[in-house]
Length: 115
Length: 137
Length: 382
Image (cartoon, rainbow over all chains, first blue to last red):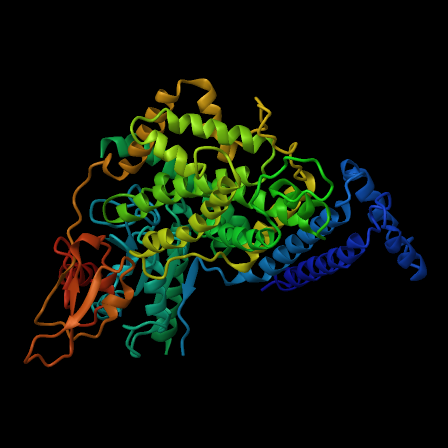
């Protein structure tokens, strides 16, 4: 087995695991309204992020949501929809990560064990 | 002493797996790999481990078992059944005396003719290496 | 056989080609084509769970005789779920889009079953029960649209009533069953709720019939596939949030509605033709769809036969048969063994898995004896 065959799956899994964790991290922030500050009652998210000194870290995500989910601007459920979106991203990331290793089980050729 | 016995590899394949009709002559011999004789079944699940043993005892160098892709058996479970029988996970199984190095199983769809031919040639080569190892002793 | 060669073979080749490239990326372990029946089954569980949560807050009444900010009826209960309950709107969206996904995956399931010739002869029970299940799913989905009780629901109810009234003899009783009386009242909506939930549970019985002739039916996709199935629904929910229409008023006569093509296509048809012709089309199409397994003729299956003198009753053929076509019965008195295998010929597919399972040469396909095959192998090996 070449080095690429040995290490590429592990690297890919780590990337997708990190992606899954990242998206999961976004989920509670979405529910607290951090990404949809125009919705009344959403400043708790922004205040919490500022007090934890991570509001700059999350600003790219805020910008992403604002540009792609602008149609939710006045929807009181915007935090929940964005939560669902990040959950979908987390699920897809987890699925790909698991499949990268899991697909090694699939057989097109079975060699019988000697024992 | 020159070895004059003809070396054959028996392929037990199901009708819906790899399409070998154009690759073999009327006797079931593969044009690209003349050592290989093809015998067809309605489903790979019909293959009995006894048949694999019979082939090897009658003088075949090796046996290739070929069914459809796992998950795509036309009769639902045939390829899973023969796979488990060969691996010893499902009765009836291969006798302990059978040389497992001389049996290989492939799970290929109808379209994968080239893949089958290359796997068959590789298996024939592997068997030749085995023979030269045993003859060299 | 001619029809099969003409159209199914090319369709089968296209399917094989699509599946081949999916295997290259996802491997056979995760190929969704190989779980074509399990995908709609999974969405059914999503519908049950999301529906249960909506059911907790739903109120099946139509009262709106007075305008009041404390008005409690079906429309306001759905509005309450959507606007006040945390995640209520998301679950409403999940329920609606999982319903659409269910029809889509059922259509893909039907297509694959048809293209790969997995519906004829010994598989007719699966096909016919599938037609019944499809009709039930479509009707259940339609009742879901009535339950919101917005202007669309009112229009759909009235259109359904006219459609039923157009039927001879059974039309009037059917209409009175449907709206649960002679007019639309609160009883109508509670009937819709009963149909929506009750018929959904009846689907489980229909699925039992659908699965009964298969051993170990594949009804659960691997978790990896399930994650993607849920992610698709959540993504669509965020992209296309659900809004109710205006609350229904019995005094109004709405004339247009937004169509969900998956479930409401019969209503579109109703606007394009006379109701009589509509029913002829629906009933005719259903009859045609049910008769599909018998359109293509082929050689009858030669069922496996047990060699009674050799059977030891080990039951391996019974365990391995994919179509539950073998039954173990008590061996006759005086036999050395306890059980004897018997074949239900009407279920046999002629696959030979029982032959592969038998270590005693006690079961055979009459047109392909395993002793003949073994001899053929021995000759070829020399």
